[in-house]
Image 1: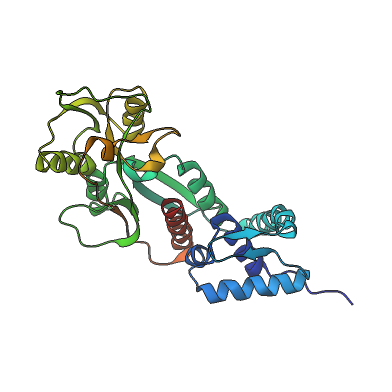
Image 2: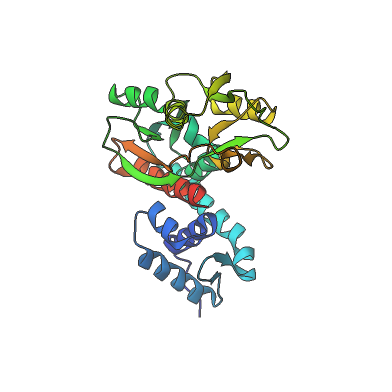
Length: 285
């Protein structure tokens, strides 16, 4: 007796769980519930007669059979998408603005994940400050922006809160009696303003030692040993040190990441759901 074909929704759920390492994030990316994702995986495992995912209290890991099946699952979904693409009349476009303090080194992987969600969707991404991107969004030049919480704005969907610290190169030392040398982004950067206000409130003398046009430039200045910078840990190369406790610098708050969008349904919204879930996984890990 011939067995029934694999259910593509179940295969997609399995791939999302593998990519995001979480049933919750997988459900968010598929715009469904965690219970529904668990049921899809259960049906797939029953169909294949093997366990694909090992569940532990803190982690979700693929079993040996699951790891072996993952590439085949991806190929199956890709073939399915190519078959459907011949009947898609026109490509839709999604323009997204992402704050430079949010994008991070994971951006290529996040873009790849969106493309995997919908290969026929044209994705346009612009990087800038939260203030600039929100202005462009309000002028309807962007469909969606992912930014830091901005003064005077109470709208937006909360994605995650991200830890910040005062980072410096491993060998960097502050010279006693001299103002704290700080590397920052150029105005108008909300993190720059926040860091300066906190240092002033704490009575810490400081001076700008470097002003960069983006986070990449600020990270380069820190790596070169010019001074300290207020940054999220994931922005820094391995080995950078949080010198805040040692120097008695004021604690930096966890800063929210918010999604502002006019996209409410259709394929672009599905792609945004996948991107939002991926951002949550990156920040919380």
